[in-house]
Length: 395
Ligand code: AMP
Image (cartoon, rainbow, N blue to C red; front, side, top):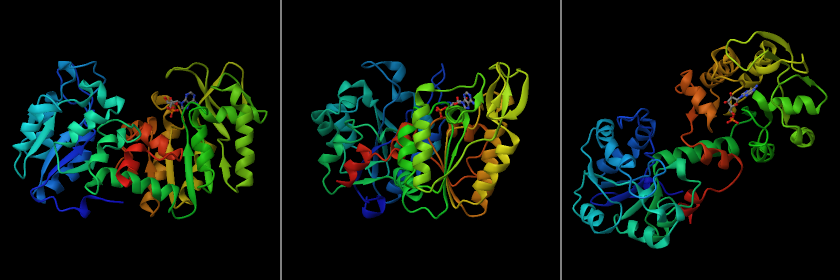
């Protein structure tokens, strides 16, 4: 796996695919700069080596050149975070971009205009990728968030940098973290899958059964398993057409010696609202008119034991409707358990969509080993797929 350490960037121009697809408010101010911060180590390392950085990214989903999606809006934020001046060029290919790149001196940074102003970017157009490739000497991919897309700047461009391409620090860290769970993790390995639907996690479950010793199935997903086994789940969220599959997963787990943990009790609510009346009930005896919205105290205690006994932990998906304060307790308890296990030496990876939101909301990000920056990319990695952006660097 080629990383920044395999190259000497002195006097070289690094063409870096970053993920600066950051949220902006109505005044075009960056409201969450996590992605810019995540790219900082790669950029600084190359500058310190005596190289220069040409940064390329997409922002939003523009249709052609649209000023509101211009990356010019984020220049001052990028400068603040990097502590270095950033030049901006209002195109990402063609003469203007090429001149700006050619004039770049060691130690300088150039930010290109939004790649997605060209439809060729998402189409993975080879001629467009070749135009991009003219801008730099070495291609660095540091955008995990788009590594599952075979776009021009994330994948296709790599073919023009034979022997001159590598992963940035962020992408390398993401790959290592996933490998630690899926391949090299110290046993016992635990995966915690929560969230709303079984259907969105089936491929992950099937892939992960070969890698883990324990699997906690929580959140809304659990009710399909409970009902399939004959439990009464009241109005809880359930995918009836996935009950067969749920039973099959339980059977497969048994054959593969994976211990499955499903909540034994739940906080049931008489309405899907923060102010609903609640009661704690056995998960397989939820009264009619009530729905399970969070893990109950016995489940939290059981999960705590499993988490603390594990050396490698993957967490994807909340244990309850954490967006509502009244139903966030199970997710917070789980976060605390994982934080404790991590403090005791376990490796913990949190990734994929809503679990990252939960981790940020409840400030667990510094108490787990790694929080993935990629939603879809993370989920596809857990499904066992080789991401095109990663394969393009390895080939
Ligand atoms: P996912 O995107 O599949 O990870 O699902 C995340 C969503 O699952 C969050 O918005 C949670 O509110 C929701 N969720 C978790 N537990 C439940 C539950 N018991 N009932 C309904 N929704 C839930």
